[in-house]
Length: 239
Image (cartoon, rainbow, N blue to C red):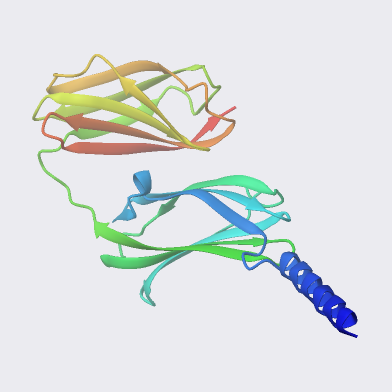
């Protein structure tokens, strides 16, 4: 009788473990390499966009990814991503730049990234994020008429940028970033120490690491006093 009782307990334990594995607490979804804000700063600028990135692994195909920033009922942003870029795959890198409307109030928001898969599993990332109004320094570099000679290109291909730059203090650096599957940075030489009205024209090589897809391009000018300005080109296609 004692042996039978032990066997019964052992069988119940195995069943319990099996049930736990069939219905994991995280819905069979895991996250890694999470970034909210540039370099995971957990800071966003109202009237601009905020960088969001994480790697997602799921035990069944992803159905959708949703993002929300919530302070109160009058200050919130919500967006659902269910394009083929994320839906219908098991593993993906979620990388988006979510617009933060100028109407939002400053303060601490709860950022939630929720992933749902086709088996009904759900897992979330929840972080506190500080959203601030954009402060414009009148002495910061000014960028106007930013353009590229084409809105598509291949990795390792050539792309020509042009812009008008006005600086009060000498330029320290100019950086071009391709934001897509990851962030790919290019430092532009030849402008350090220049100031005043500058006609910028530069051919650059699209980073070899850029995978096919849609990219945001950030063009940043930083002066010798640490002030910087960024302008953006959206919907650039890497073939």
